[in-house]
Length: 598
Image (cartoon, rainbow, N blue to C red; front, side, top):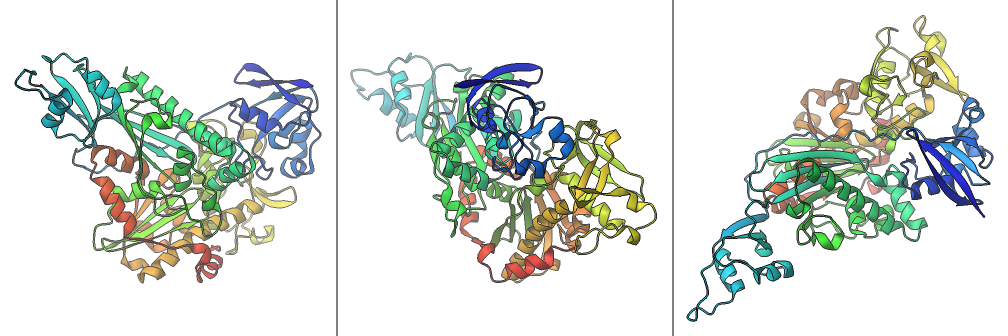
């Protein structure tokens, strides 16, 4: 028997159906609801909250552990733990996109794109000149090969009019006599959390539009391991992940082209940066080998495919080009970062890109060392009790100031939770004002300055700090930072710091030898470098050397779009990089343990 499931969100109502015992989260995902599920729906994060007005199974022990009693009484449930047991009605939070980072450091490049447009006027055939039309075109532009579509168009040209011949390298991919038709490309950064797209005029080199949106795969989990696990436990998992990405990118293409009244047939090139798992997922390639030792991916080289073959809504003979990766956990996004930073100088420079994994590169013009630290999703709000992504209401800045609390939320709305940059600030303030021991444990109330103990409370029996009182939050409940949250943060920052120390040892250099520290990605762009240094996320003696590069991956993909020679440089960077696998490194565990404290 099918039961009705009434779903309310954004003042809209839909009626879905489900059978006895069906999982509510899977039903919502199947029907394209963007329910938060950082853990991939395995019941460990407590983020897939919905309000059940009636119906549904009884709360599970897991829900009682992750939700407080007042939430359960109010009908709040975890979608991943709720089973269909009859007709039901549920309410979902307002659907809101994460505001992805699109700005970044831009480097001057020579404009020499892989896609070129040649204007050709053919000599008319005669009885004395029996050359075919393709030979005439090839002779005029030194081409090698042609697409079937271009060849077919050649049969119907007006020989007296000028031809626009579009080449991908030396291969002709399009011919037309519409002189107003442009040639465009889109640079793409596929992040685990957000996707950024840049529409570029390949003739002028100018940017015509920028668009960012949440990675639609996030419903399968906040990190790559959760998504790989989804493919292992679902028959069509690999196809599901690929389709979500392709559909999301096609929506992005439509958004960009509609905004400037551009035909999608005028887009001939996509350059794509992303971590190794995202690039496998985009191609529909099984990435499960990345999740098990020895963590070897199927491919790491730069690859190129025909757009129509992958289902992209651009010119069917356009090309999709992937930036090379370095290893299973240091991907094309990091190569993109390297393309817009200085690793060609004799001085040693350090690159840190902090997300669900912390990718780190140390190098100079002679050699590079890279590693990936399993930071987990704490920096992006997952596994933090009141953590959330960087959306409206997230606490992004925080100051305690001797008991006078000042904070800022995204879009200045009432506080809803804590995002990554806010988490760094809060922990730094707790250290600064003596709430925490060097081990990360909260001090007893008697050890604190007078009045400070009032900020401590308990949550499910765990000592917690009251970040924002309930009278200032969107749901009138205190926002807390628990002892467990601090431990999660320590695990993440300990992994990053240990990775930095291991690379320094492998290279035989010291902190004093480092000239610049590049912070890449959204988290690196928004954190306070001083507070990051205070809590040991960035080594203290490197604070003054920090340079934020923003979305370096997107900027790297953009640079490749404009200058085809950079893909060769990217390949050289890959070849001279030594990847260090931290999980098997003899010194990592000791460095990790020594790096967790404050």
